[in-house]
Image (cartoon, rainbow, N blue to C red):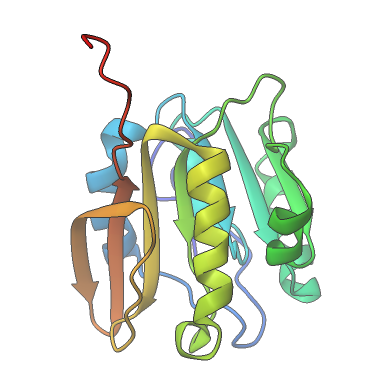
Length: 199
């Protein structure tokens, strides 16, 4: 595992332990970040189900101003923190440990830097089989994200097993790609109706 672009290109990352996470191949990662490139510089990023931080750290290397990492698995969390320190990104990263669903349920505040007005990029990468076993929890999480945390032009990158599918509320799919058994769907917030100012 390594950073493949930006100022930290080539720097190695500590890999996950066990099968709690599923790292992305360099080829798939490069293809995905080619798509996301126009949206990264200056972005505020949420890396949900972050694992060892590959996606969020890649964004920071490419010019994102801040990334909030959400991770619950303790050995993986330790690796994530080690990767952040090794890359000297502590000032631009925040790690929120524990149950991501409880965090979003109990807080209305946005993590990150002072004055944060929402996320530009959100990576959703739940564990294998999560969609089939816990779809309601993920839908609730997306509700919290769309109403409290996403900027109007944000991108939500939803990575999952190609055999699974889930309609995400209040989001519009703008792209999808499949690499082997992995599917990546990219969404943006649905437009909200505003009052007619001419009336």
